[in-house]
Length: 311
Image (cartoon, rainbow, N blue to C red):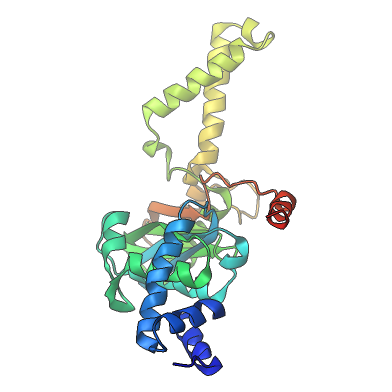
């Protein structure tokens, strides 16, 4: 059967695959459109396996709110920032977030095995493999987290077009516009200053002991500081630990919108609580930043081009 340009165009629009891939699929299946789609899906599986070794450290975080008590955040990675700006990729990330907010899975393996919400004949992993074939880069659904507020509400914030996604679980008897606005402000704080804990009560004694051990070693390696009295050295260590805790504990951080430049997040929450007539606090938060913890490959594009030219 003769393969026409119109047939190639139709298959390309259906699958998003490259023109030559579509032409080959149609030739292999004698022009049968359904079989050609299946051929591309199978071919996409092969492509996905080849691309799986590539480092995917770019991408996007997306946050979806189901209602005022339920939200989910996901991180989906790509190899390049260029693909992260691609509309097809962005729509896929949004679909993954919608999947997550309705998911009951407790881990990534279970999540990837779920029926895909946009086509129940596929799993989430199948949908990912197909997207790898369409986009042509290694993609990875790296992580997700669903937050359900037991007593209060959730608030969300996305920074930098998807570079950072935050969910705040607020504990409050009153849920009104003032509380929601305050929680969005807190979510922005978390995005900007990246706290590790809500308060000092969450910091383990082992962590503090370890930090003190490191600080003591630093002091003893300093010719001047090591000569100070033990009482003074202990005071220095306590002071430095306290300073660190102010940086990593949310309620101890200086509130980014503080008019006096001094008010802490804890004091801001007290102010909000007084205004709405009940205690408003942060139970927990989730902060995803795209690519955090992934070692990015350093590309030498000049060498890569030279190598291709010599092939």
